[in-house]
Amino acid sequence: MSRRQAVLAATGGAVVVGLLVIAALWPRPRTGDAGARPGAHPRDGERGGASLASGPARSGGGAATTGPAATPAAVVRPAAGRPRPPLPEGTSLRGLRGVVRDGATGEPIAGAWVSWRAPRLEMLGAVLAAADPATPRFRPERFSSPGFGALTDAAGRFVLSRLPDDADPASLLWAVAADHAVVVTRPGLAAEVAIELQRAATLTVSVPPSPDGWEASPGLVASAPSDPAYQTELLDRLDPDAEGPQRDEHVFPCLAPGAYEVTLHGEVRLAVSLAPGEERRVALDPPARLHVTGIVIGAEARARGARLVLRDRASGARKTIRLDAEGRFDARLRPGRYTPLLGASDGSERRLDPNEIAAAGEHRLQPATTTAPIAVHVEAADGQPWSGPALVLVALEGEPAERFALASAGAPGAFQARVSPGRYALLAGRDVLAASVDVAEATLVVRLAPRSLHIAWTLPPELASDESLRAVVTLLPESLGDRPELQEQGERRLLIAVADPVSVLEVPGGGGRFVLAGRTDLGAFRAAIEVPSGGADEVAVTVSLIR
Image (cartoon, rainbow, N blue to C red; front, side, top):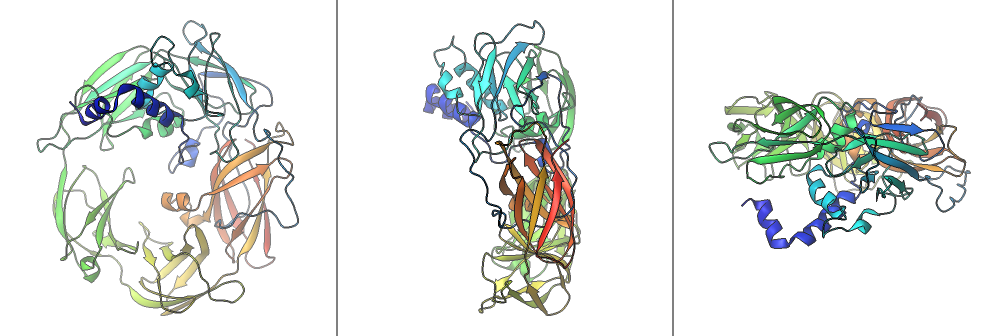
C-alpha cells in the first residue's frame, strides 16, 4: 500500500473528498494568466473549445501592452488630489453565463464544473464524484463558492458571479465534466459563452524505482492543445507525489485529446498521441541519478550556515545542499545541467567557478569573483538616515546574479558588507530603493529620491464606468525584469477603476528603462517603460490594456 493510500484509509473517504473539493476550488496565490509566468508566451483572444457571444460582461481574455515609462514598484497609494469615487457593491466585474455541451453530440452536459480557477488535475476523480448526483458523496453546495465555480444544471447552463475585489485577477475560464477533458477558454468581454467538451483521455505512466530505491514522478508537456495556460496552469501544477494504484504508477486523468511528451527530470522520454476516450498505459525506464561530491574552496564555504545552491538550467528549480565544516558536499541529483552558487546564512549568494555541474564525480569549486569590504550609507528623501527592511544588493551583470546582504554597522543608515565590484540594484524587502548603483570604492553613499509614477491605463471601451479591474503588477529595472524571484518579490495588487483609471506607484529617483508586467482581468501584459532622469517628482505614463 502506498503512502497516499495509507493516509486515505486512515482518514476516511468522506473527509478526504471534502478537503479535496475545497482545495480544488480555493484560489491559488500564484495562478492567473499563463503569460504572467516566467518563460510563458500568452496567446490572447478566443481559443478552440469555446464560442463567444458578444456583449459587455466581465473582463477576461489576454491583453498585450505597450507603454512608456516606469520603475520598481514600492508603495501603492491614491493619486494626490484625485480622490477615488466609492465603488458601488457588485460593480467590480459582471458575472458570466453560458452553456456546456458535448463536442461530439452537441447535447448539454449536466453537472459540469465551470470555474475561474484551474482545477487540480490529480484531484478531479474525487471532485467529480462529489459533483455526481448518482453518488452518495454528492455535495453540490461545495461548488458554489461565490465567483469561483459553478455546476451546470440539467440544461447544461451555468451562471458565475463576479470575483471579489481582493481576489487574484482571472481571465481564464476552466470547465470539466465526468468522462470529459478539462478545457480552458478566454472569455474576453463576452457576456455569454458556449463551451464544448471532448471525451477525455487517460494516461497512466509507470516509473519503477531506481536500483538504489529512488523514486521519481513523470511530467507531461502538451504539444496540442496549444493554449499555453493548459500547460502552465494545469499540467505544471501536478502533485509530484501523486500515485496510482501501484507505487510506481502515475495517472493523468481528464486529458484533452492530442499530442503529449512524457518527461522525467525535465527530459523528454516518450511521445504519445491520445484519442478521445482512450486509456493508455506506458512505462519508462527506472530513473538515474547524478552522484556528485566535492568541495567549495574558501572561508565563506566553511562558515556556519554555508550551503551549495544548485540551479537546474532547464527548469530553474533550485536544490540546496549543506556544506560541512570543511566546505565539502555529497548529493544525488536528477540528471541535468546545474549552475552552482555559494549561499550564506544571511541570504547572500555568490557565483562559483566552474559555473556548471553536469556529470557525476568529484568537483572542486571556488568563488568566481573577489570581494572587498565596503561601507554603505543610505539616506532617506528628507536627508535622515534610512531605516526599514533588510537591504540587499543584487548584481545587474553576470548570470546568475550575485546577491549580497548588508549588515548593520551599528549606526542609523550605516551598513557594511563584502561585495564584488560592479553595478547593483539596491532592494529593501519587496521594494527597489535604487535601480542602479556602482560599487567601485570602499564607501557607497545612496541618497534616496523617490518619485511618483502615475500610470494612466487605456481600457477597452466596452467596460462600463462603474466597473473596475483587479491587477497584479511588477515594476523592475529592465536588467532585472526577467528574473522570476524578483518578479514574485515585487508584486503589487491594484484595483483599476474605469471611472478613474490611474494608479500611482512610488519609484526610485533617477531615470532608466523599466519593465511593467503582470496580469489583470483582461489577461497578461508587459510594457517597456522609460523614466527620464531629473525633472519633476511626478512622472506620467500611459499603458494600454487593449489588445
